[in-house]
Image 1 (tube, rainbow, N blue to C red):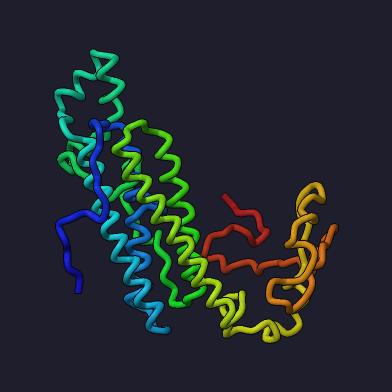
Image 2 (tube, rainbow, N blue to C red):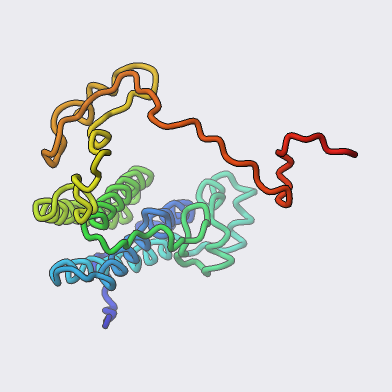
Length: 279
C-alpha cells in the first residue's frame, strides 16, 4: 500500500522562471538515469525480491523515496515554467533578451503537459521501461543500482553548474546529498553480499564448474596497439576472489577454428550456390 502526503520531501522554490532550464531538468526526471528509472528499478526489484526480508524492505524504502523525488522534479519543472505562454514564445523571436529566456523552451511543455513535467528526457524522448534492471539476483541488481545512482548524481552535478538560481540549486543540493547516501547504501549492500557469496555473479555457478575453461578466467588479452593496459590491476596480481592470478597476454592468438557456414537452401534466395544464373 502506498500513501501520498501533500508535503514534498524537501522544499522546492525557484527564484525565477527559466523554461530553458526546465527542459534540461527533464533529463534527470525522465532520462535513462533519471529519477523515474531508479524509482521503477528499485520498486520492481522490491516487488519481486525473494531473498532476505531486509533487502526487500530496503528496496521498497528507497523506491518509495524516489517516487517523492519524481514529484519534487515535477514541481521544480512547473515552477521553472510559470508564466510561459505561446505569446511569449512568439515574442522571443523579436526580442533577443526575451529569446535568451524563452527561445529554448520545449514546445511539449506548452502543447502536451500544460507547463508541467513530462515522462521524457531533455530531447523529448519518452521514458522507456527497458532502462530498468530487475534480474532477481541481488548482487547483480545492487551493482546496477550503484551504477544508476553514480550516473544520476553526475548529471545532477552538471545541472547544478548550469544555473545560478539559488532556489534551484538548493533543491539540487538536496538531491545530490541523497544520491550520495544512496551510493553509500548500495556499496554497503554489495559488500555484504560479496562477503556472503563471493564477488562473481552468479555465485551458484562456481569457478570450478568452468572446468577446462579455467585459464581464460585470468587472462588479459592485449588486442590494441601499445601495452599500457598491462599496467592495470586487471592484468597483474590476484583475482579479487583469490581463486587465481592474472596473466597478461601481449600477443594473443586465436584458439578456435575458421568457421565455414553451409550454403542454405536455394528457396531462401541467398544466391550463394556458385552457379551462374541464366537470364
